[in-house]
Amino acid sequence: MLKSLFQDRGRGRPGRSGLAYVGPMALVCAALVLRFLLQPVFGAHHAYTTFYPAVVLGAYLFGPWAAILITAISSVGAYWFFVLPFAGAEGPQADLASSLFFMANCGVAIYLVSTLTRALRRLAANQERADSVAYAHAELFRDLNERVGDHFQLVASVLTLQGKGEPERHVADALARAADTSMLLARSHRQLSGRQDVEIDFVPFATLLVKAALTERQAPLDRILIDAADLRLPLEQATSLAVALLECTNALVDMKLNSPVRVSLSHGETRTVLRLAEVDEMAGVSIITPSSGRLLRAAVEQLGGRIWIVKEPAGSTLEVSFPHSPAALSPASDGIVLH
Image (cartoon, rainbow, N blue to C red; front, side, top):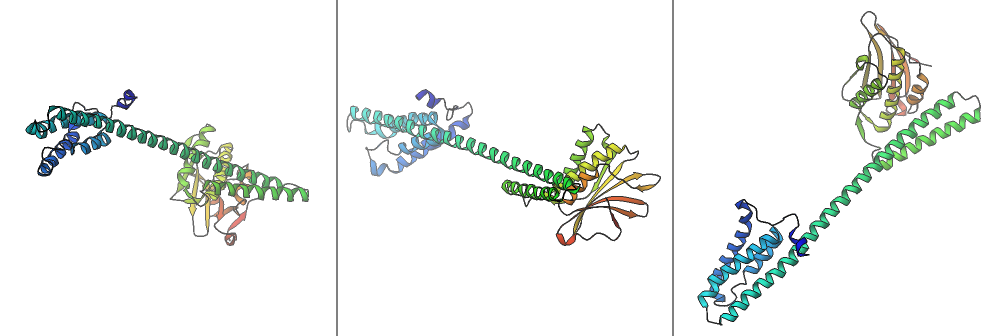
């Protein structure tokens, strides 16, 4: 046990630098000065009294090795200054007994204090590891809930898409209810993650998403240009917009356009708008009609959004619009619904 006590990562072991001795020597000097100040009171008695606190503090602050050093220096100093000048007053046996008793008490104090401080350090380390594990598990649980919420939202989009093309009325109603339930589960999982009200910076996320999609499809990274300023969206809206952007990206890659496509993102007072237009040096802006528009439309309409073909002087642009509130669902005057 003593071996494990002194092998506690070398704590308190004096090093080669003189700084390792500053603390212990300061405690010894303080105890020595205090004993000199109390000399008129103690006289020939209590030679080692003021050195006990120095040993205890040294064991607590600097470890067992420093406390042993303090004990050795204190024994010599107390004997030299406060025992030898009064030698013979109580006899050499009493002087030797008091010195041995001081060292024995210091040894017990060093052992107890060092054991307790070592146990406290281990307890603190275990608590830190437990906190780290708990935090990691909480992060995993939060990430799992976010992923499950995203999957439920995608399932709701697919169910909504399936219900639109279902001829049977009761089947369409069942699919609509299933889509509503999936959307409710998505919101519930986001509430469990504690990030239902968090807004994310969508532009860096959209840039990485488009690059990942283009890399997976082995398409040039300069085929799609993202033109947007700072855009922060709620997590639910960002998920649907990300699905829409991913579908547009895959569709644009399938179309094998000759010129790049500019993706514009804007966030107004009433709606968030995603605009896609082909960059053509000759014709300016031309129309883009993704072949996989059904899933795109389902993802957009899931949160009350709409897909428009906006007429412009140089051509037409595909526009995906997300209202911020149900009252903002009125279409623009120059928009045509894409079916």
